[in-house]
Image (tube, rainbow, N blue to C red; front, side, top):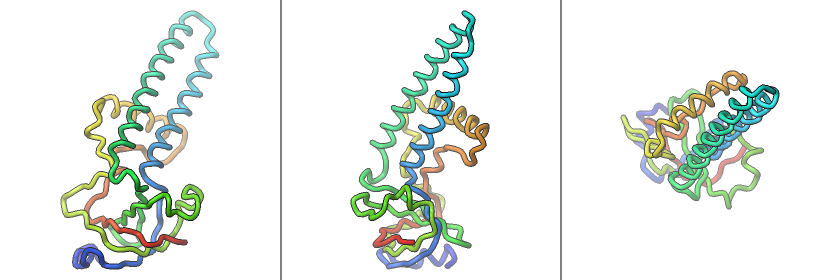
Length: 196
């Protein structure tokens, strides 16, 4: 169905779709952030131990201070994300439909997930649910609004460092604020069931 025809569907209309579901976006974003930082921390500490001269010791102390500062920013960011996320009790899953320009967003309640979600996604799934709302033209709906994070400049610098490191590790994709945003013509669906 073309996106312009989607908006003719009434709110609360039952729909069934098939697409590729990603793991819960907020949790996945935090996990990726942590794993890249932990990789950086392990490798930089190992490299600093190899330096035996006094200059290396000064550099090592400076490195440890910087790492602690970045860890503090990451911990504050994770607390901020968990506190300011849309519908804190839900885990948002984004589903990409084949040959469609829009994505489906489903808020899952962890108490009603039958299988461990980490082992189940990403996967091709069927979704049965009711239309909750449409993202309007020209609008962006934020699952987490990172623009309100107090240390925005430090956050941007940290994400840039981690993304550069991620590319050097050979990982595809980057960590950005846009990962946590729904855009026109995306649709939010209240799922009744998501199954393989």
